[in-house]
Image (tube, rainbow, N blue to C red; front, top):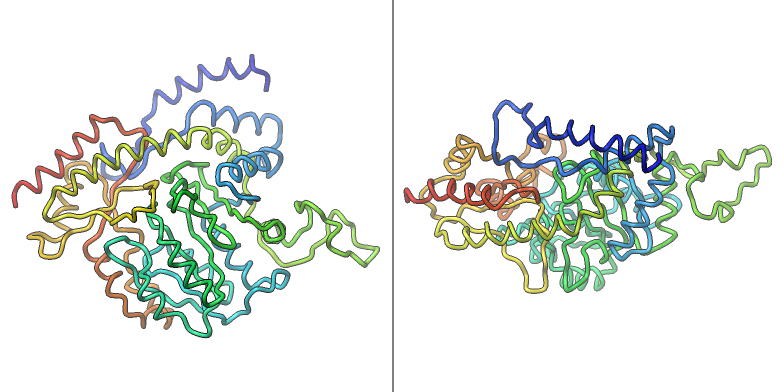
Length: 422
């Protein structure tokens, strides 16, 4: 589109945006403090319209440009965009057992924390790996280092870490465990975009890392995800897995010998794969959102500091402990009910919900206590006391960078009106 046409559209789009709420009003209950708010604006919509008007809607040059910008932001060699964070976990898991990369074989053991988004676990299981759940420290919400050491066996080949809700894991100790036992490390950073451990962004400590751009996350592309890696060959394998096992999107197709002269080089398939490609509309959103991301995270940090300062003054509530080497980029505001508090979690969350504050459990809680665990012996037989505490006493509320100081004041007053009774 020309600048002139873009300018003409901008005013109309702005009017349309102003006529609607950034809070989802389709939910049964109206929340003045929701879990998430739409963070996109005119620029993202113009990018999407541009792709549609130029008939470039499937993965094309905007995807490549966004991948480059994201890799630059992360400080990694390569980034491979996919259609969701779950797909990012799926490709990372299949990368392990993939015939081309040949790092693990079906049946090998992978360790995953018990409090995580479930598709991280399903991805590893679908790839043929044996998932063993590791307990989670209720003080940090991250993997228990003590249980991690206990769970490593000769069958263990990979650790798939999660920086839950943006709080970085203690990567020095995790790498020490991994290196001493020659284990592959993967990172799920879907809730931790921008978080740092010892001055380095999470997602740079293992073979690869997954990110999510879902609506409620640090930046959004409607749906969307990304995988980063510092290994160029790994990036090539991921591109092949992303699109049917096809050579089309690899950087150097000549590396793959096609001996049959009757195979059209444009339609050469060298591996199995999926179709988890993003659209240009998603990538267009990403091009604009990644510009906003530093400011988004800065605002999240300010709001989180205010909220956690309030929580720290409470006798009955606590927030996750953060290492001195960590700098979280909080995706949300987690709260734990202290042991011995004169009220259960449900009493506080019901108070918040009645007063217009949306709440939810900390991710899935203990996945071994979800109904799905009945289907899989390896999940239901786990004993996970730390994850149980999070399951029973933890919840979180939203952390939108669009929240005003006045809204945060009102939120703290809502908490205070409950706590003052005790």
